[in-house]
Length: 287
Image (cartoon, rainbow, N blue to C red; front, side):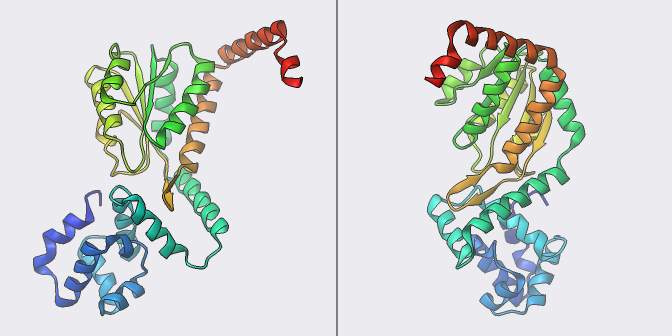
């Protein structure tokens, strides 16, 4: 289900039983805590049986309680404040091994990304990037790190790459002033999603450019305005956004593009090595 679970609960409140209404009230008022509770724990918290919680999820149209729980988790990632994120993480961790839990979560996100990624969309995105007249890349807040990483390596492959300045809305439109047909705009956005990235992608699409979204779920506002979708699972580790899987996806994109532009890549590095030799770059580094 792609719509907000809180809206679904509110729309169905009139038809709930007494026990279901208790579950609904708790989720509406404490969704940050409910998102990480088992069905048994949620039932005990509100005073109903585990089976009542499971039936509640089915009543809302979910394929069992885990499906409903995932829906709550997706929803809260774009709603929680930084303080709430820290509180939720503290509740989840308890006395568990922090290092193992965070690394295992990242491993799981990479596996999910691999299983769920649309290979056809990935290949078509590679085709569009390779044949683009000009490539624009935009990412805001934590997504800026991925955008910058992608730009650094694309700049070694292409001579037509622009990292869109996203400090203000006016700077975005200034950077995209000449965008049009034949261009590709790559937008990177993860919760909490940036309205500036959405504006940039909408602007580019309206002017005929191909749009590539690197994002995390069906709830992302980039999806309706993107021609090619590259979805990578992300998570929150305390107040920090875990972007391990998105970065792995970007690595794969770089390798796929570089294979298609193999001769250009080799030519670039031969030129660089010649410059380094001429100006003694290696010697200066060693000193």
